[in-house]
Image 1: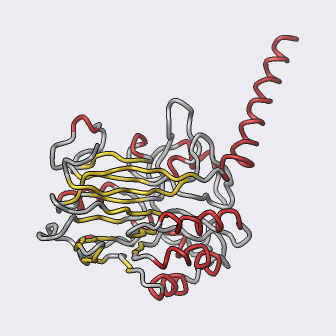
Image 2 (image 1 turned 60 degrees about the horizontal axis):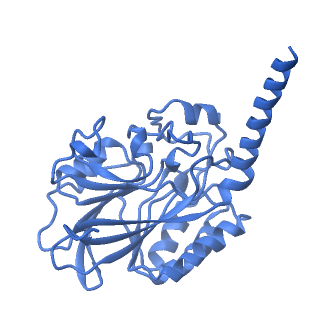
Length: 316
């Protein structure tokens, strides 16, 4: 019994230490991920695209605000904000302050559910343990965030709203087609309204979505998007070292919870080794924040992403 007591105490100690690391340390260890993806037309100049996602900000988080503002030193060619900026009713001014230096660069955005609705308490074990979609509509008992103020701040700063929009923007003197949808997690996506084959005569076509539900990824890839960019998953938020994510909080498979992979219609359940030559590239950001009621990160540091887009066949 003495040995059992010591073992139990050791297990409890490890658990408490892990919780302390996840809640007090790792969730503040912001990092920049860098990837090179070969999606541009031959002869195109490289494009440096900065993605900021899932900020989930509350006004007192000055360290996170300062870190995001510091990303302007990267001098990206283009900035993409893929939603879920707020984790508080009064977060919008702090979000706009955090993004202010990045608004000096060309950019675009889509919205997530936590740009419309304040976060609600939820059992973190339910979030991390199921590994399947939790699709829902707007809860009537959750206060509505001032989304118009957020959108006005972004568009007033010169960024393009890509929510259910297809448009062509100029980056480094080159036309780049973007097709975006509003958040599929709360069923506000309307891809049919922007569907159509990827444009010819552009450097590339980029799909943008907050939550990477496969119905949207399939449609974008089938229409010829060369790159699809998403957030929402938090990379799993609480991961198992050596194994990875336990959930994506949508119907995307756990192996694609963060990072760069390939996507094509029917890709679910398959690995990159099965990808056809014309498969799209999919990048999913683990994001910078978390629901304020579940302030933990484990084996999944908060991140922003710098993607260098290069001509197909030029990645090295």
